Length: 229
Ligand code: SF4
Picture 1 (tube, rainbow, N blue to C red):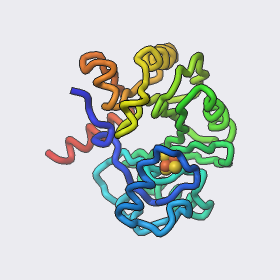
Picture 2: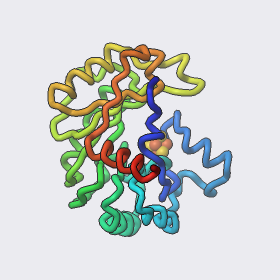
Picture 3: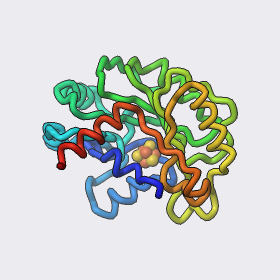
Picture 4: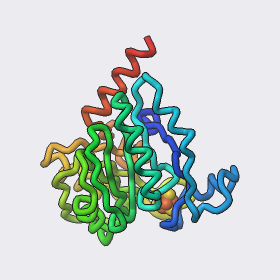
């Protein structure tokens, strides 16, 4: 049975709101539905949530589930990076669709900076990530993958995630198996672990699912299990 990525990596929404404006954004709908903030296009920072990072039990956390790192103010980033440094028991992931707006140098052992790519015309984001973010770990998420990305320069990436459209629109648009296999072969040729998100299981076939995590994330999950015993 395919594992759900949310069981491996939990969301910690320190910032809510985003200016990127993707038409398929689930976060915008949820924020509106639950009235989390007044205006999704004006990101807000909730520093009190950083208390969760003090937990001694290790976690893998995605910090941009309802925002884009490019929309974070520098002051917010500095506070969060400082807290990340104080809590090496966790791993922290960031994602952006606007790496052209980033200018970050983060010498953090436990922070992973990534971009989302949904089609071939967005491959520039991987180059912009390498250029504008100086960090120890990089990742790229191809989700929802709308077309064949072709040959991709994955050098320097430490993790590749592939996912398809979910929800009501998934009947109209879906990722083709050949695209997911092509990305996987290219990543594996560079020894990069690949994770197909659970929504790909009906497309790829349950038994064919590839769900690899970077070693550091596996160590967190292992430590979590030991902690719960
Ligand atoms: S970048 Fe993410 S949070 Fe921002 S609009 Fe797009 S899907 Fe929503």
